[in-house]
Image 1: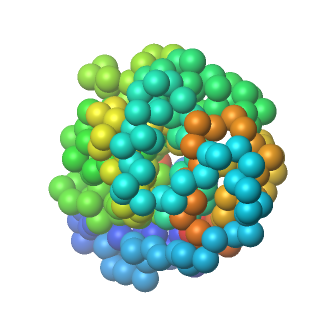
Image 2: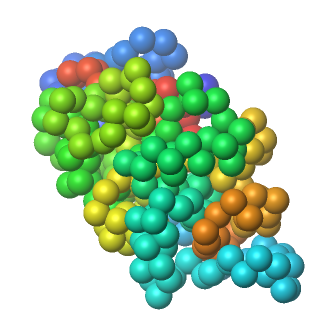
Image 3: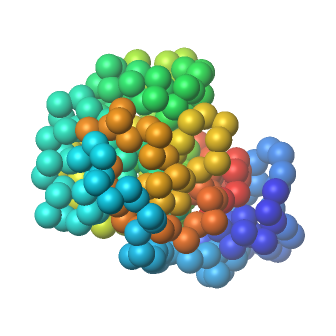
Amino acid sequence: MNVSRSTRLVEKLPLLHHRVPLIGVPKFGFASFLHLNTRLAGFPKKMAWSLDNCSVSAENKLGLVRPATEAHAEEAVEALKAGKVIAVPTDTLYGFACDACSLEAVNRIYEIKGRKHTSPLAICVGDVSDIKRFAVTDHLPHGLLDSLLPGPVTVVLTRGESSILEKSLNPGLDSIGVRVPDSNFIRVIARGSESAMALTSANLSGQPSSVCIKDFENLWEHCAYVYDGGVLPSGRAGSTVVDLTRLGKYKILRPGR
């Protein structure tokens, strides 16, 4: 585990009570929220990426590529509502997205990636305030989610009985990973969809992640649209995944950007 990166993350999590700060980050099990607000101070929340596009074949052979601008957000929303898969830039990597409440679309993402259905998908929403529609948040300290998101973090929460997510998404799991990327384009799309988007990296399962659309050109044909946001600066690192399902506890499941 990248302790320095994970340490920067947990420093953003707010203090629950005053005790000696944790040394390092737990590799296994859960740790209490202890002096964690300041420990995340160095974790970058705002992400910027290069506007220089990857070298893409001049003819745009499939006519699918669009700039990742708000002018093209409406067509992206329409594609999602029609059960299609789109490719979008986030604040970490390029991802495949679809309506999380469309079983057919979700299955399509698994087919495109060659991914086992036992590997769960995260969801993406437009705003932090939307998370409570899909997962349990009332056990979290006030302001915790706002301190982490928008940003390159996936928070894992319990779905709960009130979640409007389809039971067919990640069957057998009572938790869900939730993202609010620090990327205006994908957030505009998520808001317009009036639902949650299933989101996963735009690559074949087990292959390197994509930081520009050229990286997954062989998969364009499976998408309704491919939105080009240029070269992303993540170094192929995904989001940091934090388990917040337990009251007063956290666990870094995967260090990331």
